[in-house]
Structures are given as structure tokens and as C-alpha cells.
Amino acid sequence: MKYLITGVTGGLGGGVLAQLSKHIPKSDYAASSSRPEAAKQFESSGTQFRLADYQNPKSLVKAFEDVENLFFVSANTYDNDARNRQHRNVIEAAKAAGVGHVYYTSLAWGGHSSDSEIDVQAAHYVCEAMLKESGITYTSVREGVYAEAFPLFLNYYPSSKVLRLPADGPVAYASRAELAEATANLMMQGGPKGENVLLTGPRAVTLADLVETINESTARDIVIDKMPFEHYVKASAANDVVGKPERWFESRVSWYKGVAKGDGKTVDPLMGELLGRVPKDGEQIVKELLSTDPGYTWHQNYAKRH
Image (tube, rainbow, N blue to C red; front, side, top):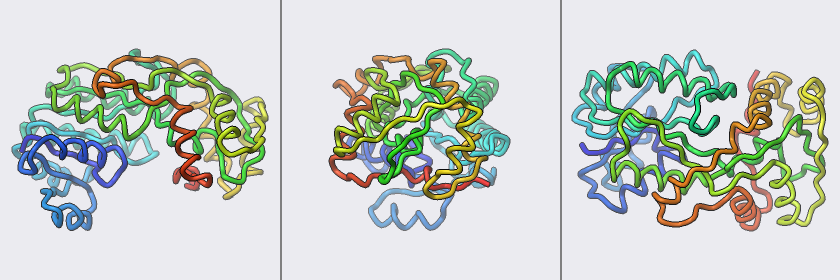
């Protein structure tokens, strides 16, 4: 099996699979998910499917048998300890199964350095260290920050009139679809071994820039209420449309601090080289989304973490 793609029911993994399918025969790739019910969706169209549950090492070793290139989507959990355990399971299974090359989906926070203190990035650094220590051949793809998730970053709803922000800074937002396309192209041409690569949008923009784009695209007049961190959590929870608790907003604090520090400002040309064109920037993506759907939302902005 030349390529096994995990996380195929998600946007990034599904996009990587779609791009591969345009260029290589179905006999050369397989879809993988922790959800056994997903098998029918892929097998009905002739795509091979393998069950890979990050919490079940035996299922991973079986799924990874004879795989040359593994696309390893990071675990879908907010619990970094659980995420680290699941990632170790995947790495150990890949080594046991003799996988040729692992492509791991990290994040672009911190750019080429490894000093970001954003909570979610810390777990990616741990996984990158595990990959290096394992001795397996790998490439860590530091995927750009999805511009599609702007409602999460701003705590934005279609009904929003005021957006409360404790900090701002430049971020080289990217399109999830273009990230998937570029990542698949990287896998097909062969990524650098034992290295981190960075995929970003072509320029960095601020949250204030995105709010201006929202207003221009929807003919609204949303205002930004800048406030200190000590007020942000309580004020945001007290006024949240869907009633997310203070703990949810506390989990966002490291994100804003990282943005203010410049953790998302690095622009790298690699994504454009892999696409063969200039990637879309954050403002372009937000404008396109709202022009197509003025009521656009993002699922994670509705998730209540207690």
C-alpha cells in the first residue's frame, strides 16, 4: 500500500485523500478512520478502507501493515495527555509495522522555531520529539492556521455586534482545502526526512483585518471591544450566544497571547511552490466564505467544554 490516509472523515484528511485520488490509482491508497461505520462510505466508491483507532494499538499495527507512506492526522482531543498517549500509540505501531515514511500534521504556531507556548502547539512539539526519538522516517508538516475557523478565533456568530478581544497580532492564515492539496503534493513528491516543513498563507493579517473584511462582506458594523485578559474570560462567558462556560474562554488565553507574541506571523513560500500558484490569504478566504454563506459558522465555536 503506497499511501494510507488517516482522519479521512475530517476536512484535512478528506482533502488529502481527494487530491491523491486525482493523480494515483485506487490500488495505491486507502482511507482510514477510527469509525468503523465510515467504511461503507469509502468502499462503496471502490476506495480501500482500514480501521485505525488511536486508542487501540492492535488496530493500528494491522492498519499500517505494508504501508509505505502514512498520513498521520493529529488526535482529535483537547486533553493533551490523552493526545500524547494516542500519538505514541500511532508512532509505536508505525515502527512495529515497518511504515516507510510518516507525514505528521503539526501546526504552524511558532513558525520554524519550537518556542510557541500556545497550549495546542505544545502537544505537537511533544509528538515531533517522539517521532525523532523513534528512529522512523518522518516529516512533520506544520499546517497553517485555518482561516475557515475565524468564528472560533473571534468568538463570532452571524448575530454578533461586539467582538471581545484581549489581544491581536499578525497570522498567516491559510485555506484548509489548499493545505490539504499542498500536503498531498508534498507526499507524492517526497517530503524531507526527519525535518519540519511549514505551510502558510502568502501574508499575515490581524484579527482586526478579518473583522473589517466581515463588515465589508456583510454590510455590518461589528465593533471590537479590546479588554485586558483579566476581564476577557468573564465578559465573554457572560455574553456568549450559546452559553460556553468560563473554562472554555480560559482555554483560549494562551492562543491570544501567542498571537500577540507573533507566533503566527511567519510566511513561508513552500505552500505556493507545492500548489504552483499563490495561495489565498486570510482576508480572501473570509470574504469568499461570507459571500457564499452570510450565515457562516464554525462547529468548534459551539462546543461547550466543561
